[in-house]
Image (cartoon, rainbow, N blue to C red):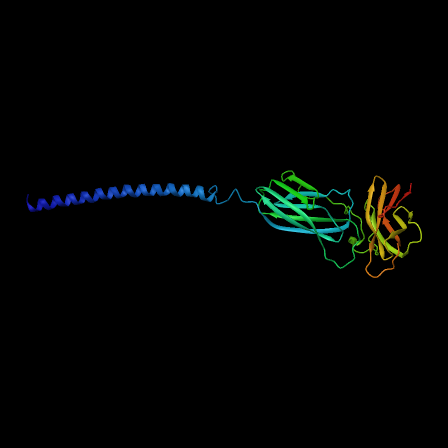
Length: 313
């Protein structure tokens, strides 16, 4: 073969070889790209948990803020509905009356979340006030607000600690706002912290203790007594109750109503100091604002068991 023809043939083979290699590279590059796209699609679906828009439809429910307000503290009245729940815009509102050893307490709120259920527990804590506290079972009226991270809540359970009542509601069926609350289902003087000062006049249906004061103390010389006087708005009870010694003061431990009967329980509280050793008699005067309540009968019970009844009708 002439030299020129041989060079042309080698050049043709070389060109064809590069063309074939380029074709193989093109095929491999295309296959690699397809596999990479498939892996990316699977990774987006499995890892993000989104619908492709970047929004997580399964946001985990959590509590973002909790507040608790003590509205009023009084002596306990068992006629009061204890817990009400409302839900609006990822905010749960709870109101109720928490039972406490005395009115001198405030509420605290604990929360927990499990899946789509919110649990709210209300406790009573001493308010650490230096003021003297009336000795009766306390009724602590409160309102609490719990803010949530999303609207995923389905069930709300609100309960009072120490064996108190529990309320469970479906979030979709709960009202948007709390109903108007009447004055606390309790009865006390100025939050139960002073026994010798007058509280504001009651303008509600329930009777309320206005004041109780100890008039005189001494050694007992006779039986316990109770006298009552009343008009349309006020009941006054004058009595004498026995105690272990004269160094006691009188307190109202309970004030309740049933139908048109009003019952007042009077107890005594020991005072510090050296005291004469004799059975004491504590003379007291209690004033009750009747509000809209029209009693037919008043029952005054002394904590030591003496019971006195007055028909007012």
